[in-house]
Length: 87
Image (cartoon, rainbow, N blue to C red; front, top):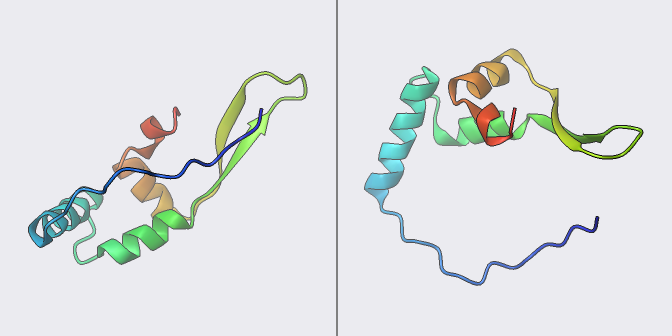
C-alpha cells in the first residue's frame, strides 16, 4: 500500500478571537487543569508517541500508543482521544 500526501485546495474558515478563547477555556475545563493553556496542551499531546503495527502474517494494521507520561495519559483519557483512533 502506497501512502500519498494530498494538498489542501480549499479555504480555511475564519476563526474569531472569541471562538479561540471559548475553545481554550473549554479544553482547560475538560482537562481539569485551569491555566494550562492551549500551547502547553498541544506540547503535551504532541509528546505522545504512536506506531503503526502489522502482524507477521500481514493483514490488519493497528495504531498503538508507544509512550506516554502520567500527564499525557490523563489528558488522553479526559479528552477521550481513543475514540478518534479506533481504540
